[in-house]
Length: 143
Image: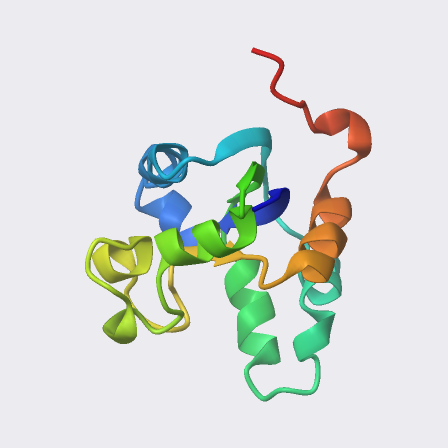
């Protein structure tokens, strides 16, 4: 396994429910290190740009509105097989299908408001990280 980086977002419903610390704790206990983190309130332009891949889908306007409805936490996670590990810790997009003990099974209200986002692959992770972070905002763990 290789050390990877992936993007994680605590979505507006997760921030509203005060789950920031719990989400970070679960990632850290799962072997992932937070190497970049910040809170943002996305603009419509930012949300549209980030989710442009879904532009033609019927849920796109609702997704943009949801992601701009409150602040989010964006973070870069690093570790062995980080992309897959992040996705396992998050659980299935539909909380009704998520494994017990995952973030979405424990805290998500619906498919739409499912607390967290995570990159789905290596290329996506690279693109998503660079959307939110400059290289000097990511701090490699030296201790």
